[in-house]
Length: 415
Image: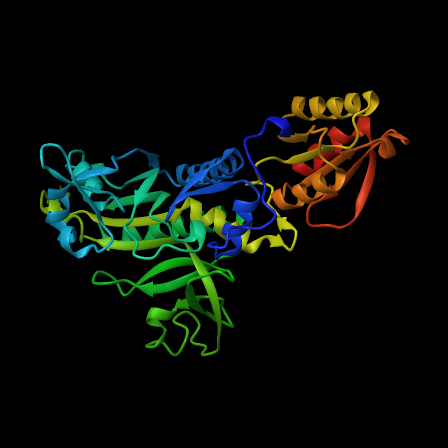
């Protein structure tokens, strides 16, 4: 991608209304733009990151036998009335059509997936199965803040599992736990499995929290086993449920994922049942597992930045290499073009700063702000030795590499 043609604009300072570090950096670097309170546009750089996070999640869901579907965002009132959430869900967006029929913009999809599953499930032979989607959700939050960390419109992965019994649900729950850890590791962040209230259908649910200075949550991390407990249930828990130790570290954090053992809470209202081996009718047991993609993107930035800008982990970076051309003479241009084409031919994603009207200092400052993992510089100075300057975003050390070896070196680092 030629940077001269990229649809973006960097800012020296974030707007005054921006609170979170991640929101400030993503806005300044041209990844996102606020359209309204709690509503954001993802510009080309931001969408590339979001799509990479989406692909990581999709790969890990398919690896645990998830089948991808897509459900409607516009959902009928009567489904929400059946579960009692038309009145009790306080952030539900409600609207009327021309025929005065009422709908909700879905903040979650239990009210749609349960009646959908009822059309397929007849027998124990149909179970278990696992469905997921990656889709836009809506929540009428009273106070939106912290950029992508709390919005009214957001992209979310929700996985639902369907089982004949509690034991089978618990076994799958463990598989999802491993998949979640893989997702967060690939996105370059450390998360803490965190106990939260399970409501009326289980003792605990689980959140996945990552430490962040802009975090709205408070978690208590066990000094011994690293299990965490969120603030809402900590008052009744003096010792770690896993290791029985009593020393905890208090930290601000951001929730990037959650998991619930729903039991039959959303099966009963829709009479979602199956016939067992003895031809007896039983309620289907369900689990649900969510990850907010925009929030995860913001959490990555909260965890990975410095005073110059973002430092993207390689799997979610919009590009793998930022190639910067310094100078506009023929030799420099031809050499930079050669590096660009060689890397593209090797399947390396490159943002090529070909702009002739920008000073070197401005180019370097933008490169640091945008945060692509590897920076290459082609200039008259480097070409004196027929070399390209290479630097990793998080390092200060620079290295000179021969032009004919640069694609091989980048590909080795890529792997």
